Image (tube, rainbow, N blue to C red; front, side, top):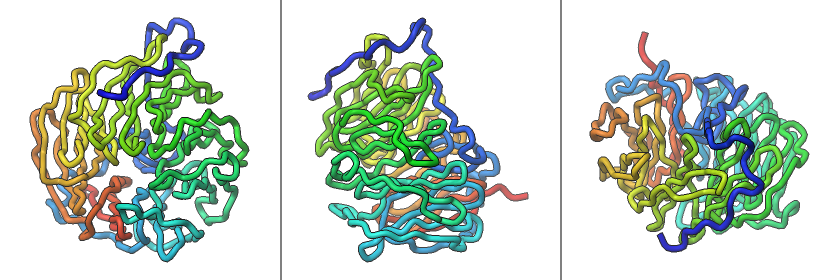
Length: 412
């Protein structure tokens, strides 16, 4: 594709004996129970969680509504940990971070702060999903602030304002990438990828500026070395997780600089994808840097990431739900009529949310798309936020603020 080139190799090599690659996504130990959903893309940043306790029929398409409330404009996902659900929204010039009882929806605490709406061509409001870890919750505001609160009480712990500390301004649509945890560090990409001590907020390291960023990085392990795959406007950036040192960069120029989907990693391969006619590419990481395996315009993840199940990618190619072979990029099937939606998975069951607020379940299969059950979760439109699944409850939020918790647990 035009504008795609390798602009940097691996700096200093990736370690000894690296020809025997083994890459595994880091399970975020201690982030919460396995069936919690404590951050963007779930417990392992893959968009996939366990199906234990999940009824793929959603009570034959008639799940009980456990609770519903309005939290204000926004696209931030819901995080669930230790019996609490965290969400954020914008109303009348202010953002609010909420903590609810995950089962009943009772508000436990909320914190409000002034923030620009950033509603160009969308409803605006918070775009980053809260991160819950070790008794703390981390929240990224669209104006470029990283805030840390006590997860139980909402007491503020520390704050970082990137415009003051790094001189960076929020991009056109504001900061939407979420914070993530790596051992004792909280990581965030606002042009500079920065690691902070999770408790004190002390800066550990900062990468150079790779330009505006909308996506959330991914932490993974390569041959015993922890790394970060970030996807700012410059393209795919691979960093050492301990030091922030650049290891490799693959240029990827997208219209408006919007690279919003998180990278997907399997073996020594990394998939990136963007909308606006760009598409996706599968890259291979070696001692020589990042090299292309294949490219395709048939998987354009404009806003939401795909999921990888049993060698197949499932995701939205703009407004077409698409199944693609990981190794070759061959399209196996497409499904229209769902709009610019999103999806997650419970083991090998797809949970698809249309942009008109309908939830569908289907078996993840390269043979085709067959709906198991469907339910209207919200009556709003432009429902672009990925749902969250935890403890048999499905959380869905609309752009205008309607937050719904559905009981999708298996019966006794």
